[in-house]
Amino acid sequence: MDSMQLLVERSNKRVYRRGADCVKLFGEGASAADVLSGAMNQARAQEAGLPVPRLHEVGKIDGKWAHIMDYVEGETLAQRMEAEPENPAWLELFVQLQMQVLDTYMSKLQWQRDKFRRKIAASGLDATTRYELLTRLEDMPQQRLSCHGDFIPSNIILQAGRAYILDWNQLTTGNAAADAANTYISLEKYDQPELAAAYLKTFCEMSDTARQYVLKWVPIVAGAALGDCPEGDRAFYVGKCGGLI
Image (cartoon, rainbow, N blue to C red; front, side):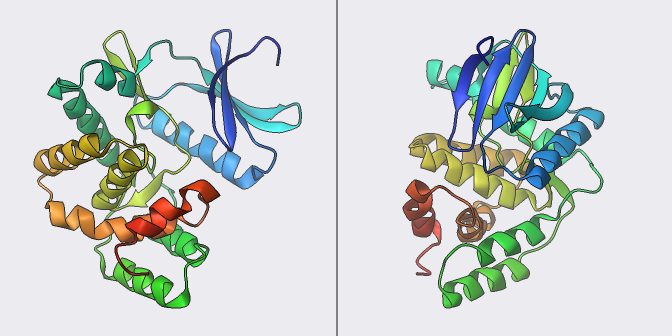
């Protein structure tokens, strides 16, 4: 551990640089199923030709699960957007990359709808609200698109004219508008309401999707997020359930 440089620290993981490698070290409570599923998702994205860091190994370091992959030197798209907030090219690149993922077929992925059902059931919301969210979910169209599930600017690394997409743990097969709704509320959660609004406008224009349709997914996605979110985020997601509570 002494030879590793800490890059990112979250409640459930830490990311380090170790020479030419990047080490994603999961917390003590990480399940083997989730860790191995995330590695498989990244491998599928890599084999499908998407721009992802090459995965080398899944193992344990000091008793904790870890993904070991190429370290990609560069700045995040979030940093570039912060440095040039008036430049629309970065937001357009962000949406183009998301649409590239959506349009890339990957087999044997978990169904987004099944994941949402399971997480809403574990949300801690009352039975009436859970019923309403699950009914809304069943009424929404089902698609077979590759949805990243955590598509935010800090998960994009820019290097020498190329963009690399990180964090594939939440990858599913499902509806593009649901993936856009997740990005939209994630940007709002990180106190970027203006960027969230600009993102929604850009995504809808570039994908020819009705804004109202993306927003219909917001309570569903927020309810699902409550299934395993940190306690400090619960109030935000409950608020996004859209007056159902």
